[in-house]
Length: 277
Ligand code: NAD
Image 1 (cartoon, helix red, strand yellow):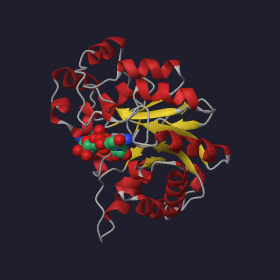
Image 2 (spheres, helix red, strand yellow):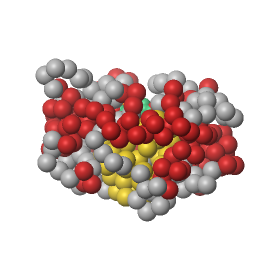
Image 3 (cartoon, helix red, strand yellow):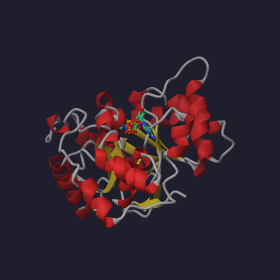
Image 4 (cartoon, protein in one colour):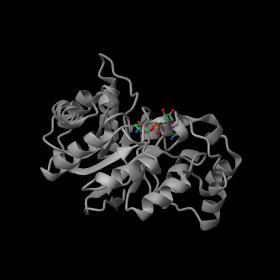
């Protein structure tokens, strides 16, 4: 079963969660059906964001699950157009309303856009009021943390960043470990990129464990103490992505995967975002 990672304040975060970015929403309730599949498979940690436009649907699916709210771990994020102190407080309240909850387990600044420092103050205050259990950021680089460090009462507890075998984030990981900032991977499966799934090393390792390449990649993340939120709309893969606890990778296999780092991301470089807003 899923393990937990402990945030610096002692909150336990399920290490394996479910990302809901770009899951189809239609009149037939496709989105809710997929969330039901995921809940049925055992996922309790769900990652959404205001910008994904599916907080309300996720709130419905969770509300209709028959499972207590407190048994779920819900994350949302404040989008760039809502940065600033008051704006962030309002965005948080809207996200809670949509998700049909009075608190969030985790709330993140989605990108370090203009006024992210004021947003961080809002997160610190919401945290002090007990409305958010874990406060953090996404797509932050070392220079953003160094800037926050100079003025924050509470440092970000987690950073959600693009990470997969082709983009391993080694330097940022080391910095985060030194500052007790947990590492959460978005795009843990390289967003389904073919070159990852067709990689010879990963295919050989997968065959030797009678597992899929996806499972090997997700296991690699778990062994690096990274929190993962793979996304899938396919019921078979939803289960497959959870079935990671009956095998392990050897140190040699971890070393082989370490060599697959290309240093190239799939997405936009967050370094472009302001350091001193
Ligand atoms: P991902 O790495 O989870 O890849 C998802 C894709 O991989 C699927 O659409 C499917 O095509 C494929 N896939 C899934 N399971 C598979 C399997 N077992 N075998 C083969 N292919 C499989 O990418 P993602 O959805 O972009 O990232 C996961 C989550 O991270 C998102 O849903 C979202 O919640 C979050 N996210 C955050 C940010 C951010 O800026 N903070 C950015 C992107 C995504």
